[in-house]
Image (cartoon, rainbow, N blue to C red; front, side, top):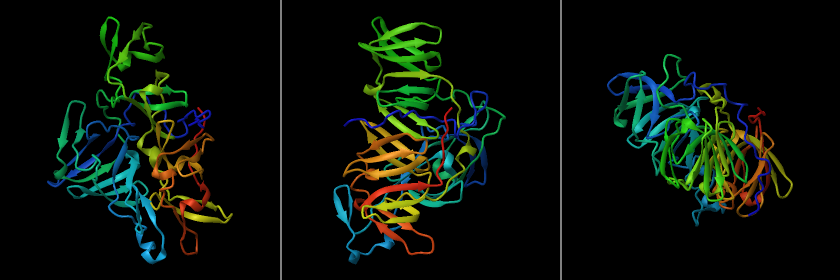
Length: 397
């Protein structure tokens, strides 16, 4: 389809502190209490490579909290995965690690998660890997320990101290450009995320292995790629090893996953990085629904009978680029047809998103809780425009 992302330049200074290599406030940090009444503090590596406050934590919501508002005799039907039911479907939970205050284990594959503002939710592992996963803790510059999941009682997330910085965890950051837009943030290159990771490619003379810290720029070229190093050296690349996709995690916009075929250029450069304190503004979703009949309903929102907090994510695709955007950065959503909605961000950028339950015909609709009134349910097909209120703002650099 024709790309509707006009001038979508993602800016991050509205949220992030000016933090570069001098400290590690961008790293996940916390305190782990064990069943043996021990407590360890340090920088956390969650699973294999979840390192930063902007990384996503994902799990399954075991039940839909809004299901009790609907009875079979109401005649309301929900479509999910090609099936129709009178019961609202289960949903996936996703947030950034920076949104989390504590995690308490209530089962081998089940947790109670509290966000910074106090909201609590019961979650199960489902098909995701963030529950019942290895947790490593860098407790000093020289010592890292791994705590078995079944030995953990509670995990408390916290701002990192300035006492030490774990080695080899400075992220790859910079700007990725495609024909669809320009994206600035943390860069994950085939799941490689740190500046000390190795970049592998092939030239006409053979294979090369270079640390990302030596790279200034990567450009798409007619017969491959052109690599420009910080020392001025230029190398023409035939292929880049196993390059499938590039993920850019933009602290105050969201996450984009870009197929390798879309890459035009990548510049590696320092950017401001967010700290734990930058994630403390979680609030319920508020807004106004304009129906296709012209009725306006305002109140607290349960979007898709699922997302009810501003830190939760809207997901969709535009021209094969995947987007995950926290609701706090959404100004409005305008359903366009069975597949696509037009999204306007709080910084004025706009794009169409499709190929997702969040923005298409399988959306379960919105439950609105007006002040001093009973809840109102509006099916997705009856919605003309959703306008959010009290949203976060991003500002130009």
